Structures are given as C-alpha cells and as structure tokens.
Length: 115
Length: 109
Image (tube, helix red, strand yellow):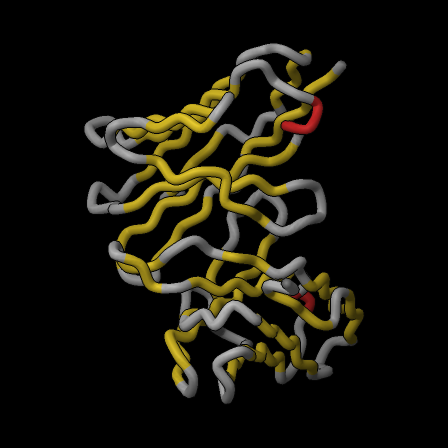
C-alpha cells in the first residue's frame, strides 16, 4: 500500500521559475493538505482541501496555488519561485472522524531549493 | 509567543533511561492533542493521541493538563530506536492544526 506519494522528491529552481508538486493518495481520504517545514519551526499549513474540487487557504498561502481535480490528487504550484520558498514540503491526507479530523498521513516530503 | 512551544533539546540520554518532554499551548479552546514522531529527513508519523485522562502505549505515556495548558510525553526504558524528533500537535477546531517545532532525542548506547 503506497499511502501518500509525492513527486518530485528533490528540485532546484531559479528565482522566478515555476513548478508543480504532485501529491497522490490511495487511501480514499477526503481531506488533503500541503505543509512546509523550515528549521526551528513547526510544520505550517499552506493550503488544504476537504474534497474533490474544493480548496482553502491555510496559514501561509501567499505565493502558492493548489488544485484538486481528482479526489486522490492534490497539486501545489509555485508560479514564480522565490528564495523564501526554499523548504521541505509535505503533503498529508486524513479522514473525518467523530471529532472532526483523523490522523494525518504524510508523504515522504519534497525538498525544494530556490536559488 | 508561539501557539505551541516545545523545548528544542537535544536531549541526550543513555539506553534504558526515562525521559520526559513537555509542550505548552496558548489557545485554551484547543480540542485535540497528539504526539508525532519524525525521524531524520523523514515524514512525521502519529505516535499517540493525548486524552484528558492520560494514556499509555507500551513504554510511552502521554498526559494532558488543560488547566495549565501543557502536554507531556514520557518514554521509559529508552531504546536506540527512539532517537528522533518528537512533535507536539494541537488542534483547535476545524482544520487548524498547530505543530510545535519539535524536541530532538538522542539515545546512546
């Protein structure tokens, strides 16, 4: 069982370039998320989705766009990369439970460097 | 002030030791609490949920003190394989989930 899969695992960009990170989950989860993790800081939510065709802003959405055209996929786009977007990006998915949101299942992460 | 604060460590302990981590949160309306484990250059994984009554899973014990707004994790009989970063996670409702920066643990032979 693959769980949550992110591609690519590593990427180096120049300032101003664009790219898309792909997240795929095979657990039929309703909810999907994109986080970034920087040294000395906790994971911060960029955008999330509660279902196919829906997206919402998280804590740090500026400079990113997302799309969820299929339930199993959640794409994160950087239209014009900046050095401040150098980070490790984690995709996660979860299911609803009796208290709202269940356990978060994370992908292995994508390391992005913007020069 | 950060919404979720943890001692960054690192904690260096010998095998077999007992080690405790604390985490404080600022939002008194927080509803759910968790500890996640993150190995070096890997993704976070759920270690355990934290309930008001306290809960235990083998060598791991989690406690919640709502009055003082802190969460603790106790690891007994530390193993080399326990070396990792432990993330305190607080959910305040809806999809707002706040991660602490993590506490690093090194268990040495």
